[in-house]
Length: 120
Image (cartoon, rainbow, N blue to C red; front, top):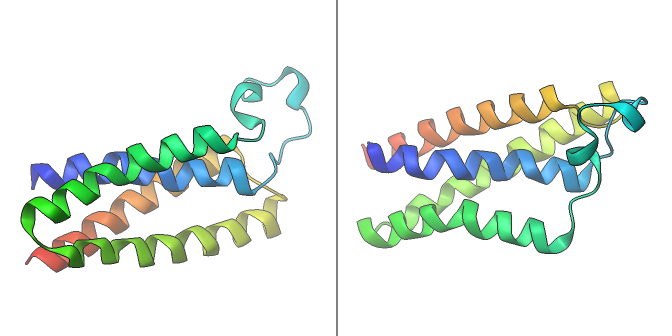
């Protein structure tokens, strides 16, 4: 179980980070807002670093447990990212900090459900 905590934490944050790259910031008052540093587009190099750091614990756990099936969690996470992204775009016109937090929390819960179901 502790290994799941080490996997879910960075992987769920990767899901949230993808919205910074794929969606516009939804607030009009970006010029003097608190979110200005994160509301600008995420450069490719930083997204690649986030992907590496987010996926590495999952890859290590799958290899350590000799269970490549653990990688199947990426499918539901991709579906979650697409569904939430469409919802954020439709209702808000993009993402806000609260959207990133909600995405991270939903992704983390989904990771726990899928990986626990797989390991049991």
